Image 1 (cartoon, rainbow, N blue to C red):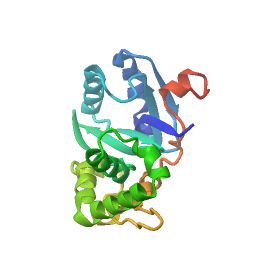
Image 2: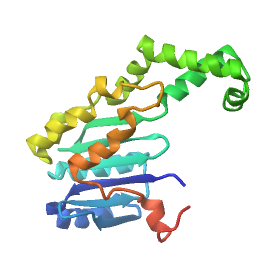
Image 3: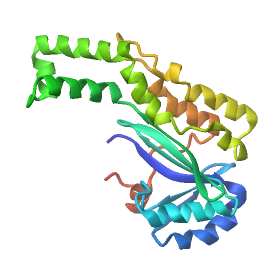
Image 4: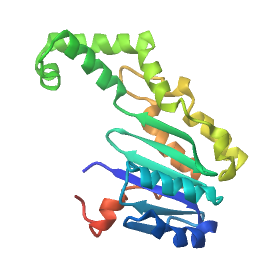
Length: 223
């Protein structure tokens, strides 16, 4: 099973206030000490899909507690949403499979009804076309445009309340569009796939791995 991690992080100095406020979320939750700097709570609404969940996080942040919702799905990508002073002030989504998704969309447009995943494996001519489309996608700048959409709302100065100036400066590397767009067509190597580990290292949240509400509710059993 691939990793799926999601939770809401905050500074441990606010633990008493958060523990007092969590019942106001009106949903099941878990709360943990992540390390000596960070605490994390896990809401049943893991993807913040309900308006009530977002309202709870905004209200909690209004009391001066900056909240960082973080998610990491090993196969698909990662991202965050930062809540501060009653607002969602910045966010990002890094998708790992953009080039695959866009390439397959173009091939499906050219060959309606085709089973791309199977045909690319079995059909050498289609495989060459796949590589050609991928190359054009990268060279044309379209992949760059799609990556940019995911980080368009990144406002790194919003991290000033919870990170040091050095940490904020280091985050510029994580969300540098030029670096994220570097792609080795031979190896498939890209900073996109390493960016989540760099983000976690800078923030000091390396322990945010293989954990989410569903996992904890199951008693630590994989679903």
